[in-house]
Amino acid sequence: MASSAGGMKATGRQVVTRFAPSPTGFLHIGGARTALFNWLFARHHGGKALLRIEDTDKARSTQEAIDAIIGGLDWLGIDYDEAAVFQSERGSRHVEIAEILLANGHAYRCYATSEELEEMRAAQRAAKQSLRYDGRWRDRDASHAPPGSPFVVRLRAPDEGETVIEDAVQGTVRVSNAELDDYIILRSDGTPTYMLAAVVDDHDMGCTHVIRGDDHLNNAFRQLPIIRAMNAIEGRWGDPVYAHIPLIHGADGAKLSKRHGALGVEAYRDEMGVLPEALFNYLLRLGWGFGDEDVISRERAIELFDLSGIGKSPSRFDLAKLQNLNGIYMREADDMRLAALAAERMDGAPDIELLARAMPVLKVRAKDLNEIAEGAAFLFAHCPLAMSEKAQALLDDEACDRLALIHQRLTAHSHWSIEALEAEVKALAEELGLGLGKLAQPLRAALTGQTTSPGIFDVLVLLGRDESLTRIGAQARCSAAPQ
Picture: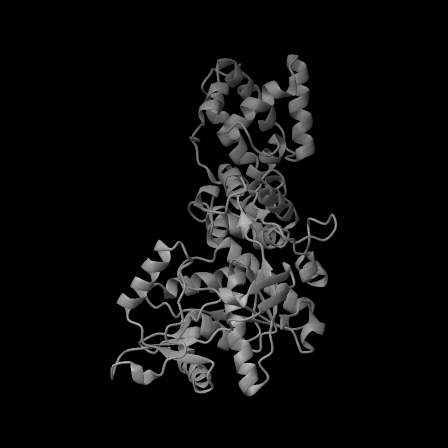
């Protein structure tokens, strides 16, 4: 029997997808993309997107990680149609299904000791065989075990023929059933394993499509026997549509790791100053495409997204492309919103209104919020300004003499606008027989303490007449002004 690929037609039911992270750390960039693809597919088809927290590993699962995952998803704008399901709260249901499988001959008790299993594996290693359970309790009666012996419950996996999955991304994938072993579904302490829990939860949540990383493809072949056994017993346990997405690699083609840069969504939000809509767009285009469109809004993404657009090859994470995309979104973003976000990255309590007025000239040069915050720092500096080494080098005696002239001319100037100030400084440059840069460069250093900034006349207007003249005068005093 094959598991079929496709969308609505594959199930005849409302599309239901789920994102099922384990809360053992941050929201990984790969997990965020998986969440996004599930969400978009459900939204495109008018279905439901669900969230399941697979927190059965109590030793490693933390509330901090749960909060980080949910916070990261919320920041990206990925919402869910029902309250999150916590797998750890469903243990009795998982055990119930294991007992049904056991009672109907689709599972059995295995009394093999850890010592016996280690001997089995040692023999397999010596014979250069794959390490797998040999089925020693598959057809033995429980009476052969000593009374009171601990046991696990193993699934009776099919051992003849093959299982075929028509994966919506990978295409036709086949596995010989002889390669499937009878894996554990209930541990000796009575707790369910991941393989059982995930299948039961997917069924009970009504999931029609399982969209996940292709490192789970082997799991699909191991999970289908549970689904099909339960379907034979109860009915209504149909195969989901599987879509296994290629993993994300670094720019060098190796699996994405810490050496390629940040792995968690919160690092892009908190440390790198990326806007959520930019990361949303970038993750969308990481392994999925539609023609030549690169800048795709949330609404357009919902309109276009389908599994057919996902490629079969691993995608490569390119930080430069993300930063470029982020720059595009920042230039389109509301100025007051950017001002509020940049203010969070600055010392003190900067004037949001002033930041917003400066945003049109700040955001055109920046690729992230950090650069906006750095570029805006001069607005809130106090005399004497801290000077960068390059800025200080510009302020030699000759430059200070010219600043004194500029100070004199601008003090007498009453109309403080970009056009009027530019005309005044250009006129002075012509009188002195200098290019505009010979005045603009030391003027920028005096006003900002830096050698780069927004346009110098924008800076003068943003700082205002009094503050500008104070800063220019502070540097002009380093040389005697002409009388």
